[in-house]
Length: 259
Image (cartoon, rainbow, N blue to C red; front, top):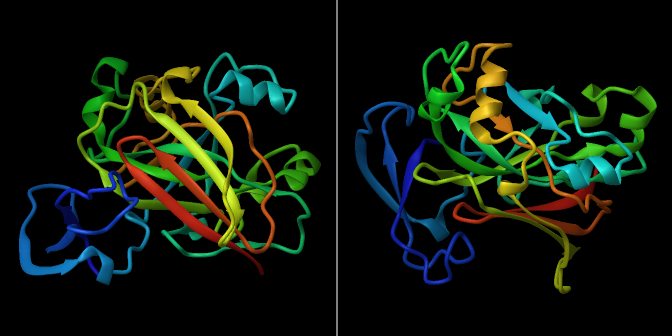
């Protein structure tokens, strides 16, 4: 198990195909000057894990006005923050496990920011993007019935497997206007597009979110900020495959199974 750099260009674009792509292993972690080990494999022969295991996953609620409205909530005047535990993090193709406590588990497709700066604390908005290592796809899986019952987010958002991340981190990307898409369908069936939005619809943009979070808690290399989900959240059932696609990043796919 190691970090690596995805090399080459897929003819299908993004992560839809693996032909022609390789993974070059690096020593240690990716934060800093990269040192390659010389080992290299075809991407098709590699099992991708979550591209990072953060010290914390900071999430932003109601950052799309239409999503706030579909759940009957007002748009917040400041970013609404909550946390997901690191034990909720899984990678591409790992199963989302439906807990027996909930009868309404839903998908939330999101752009995720990965922090690269060491000790990002009280960062000015003007300097916020300098702290970014890159971006990946995320699914803020939520037990909606428990969220409503608890009137806070910890249990509903914190189950094991409720934070898929991947397929990799894209390090050179302008995140100001990217398509965010979620599709759900049973394996072998034509998937249904459930969510379709753009990061330009954020209530609070990437720089604002990083600055705001850093005035609450110090951000460390590898920490992840989930930026909110577009309208169209909906249920997941056993046998589904849910995909989150972010323009310029790739596609994160996870099967859904009962616990």
